[in-house]
Image (tube, rainbow, N blue to C red):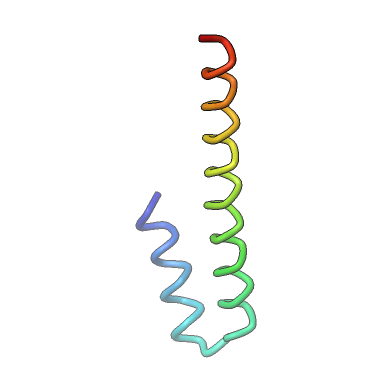
Length: 50
């Protein structure tokens, strides 16, 4: 999976499409933020039930 994202990133950089690369980077950051928020929510659920 990491190789897949690396290939996309390298392709966008080599084609000099900065706007598409910036959009890709923002999307990747949003995915990380959503993952952190989900992890925090699961942690809160576990704390309430214990």
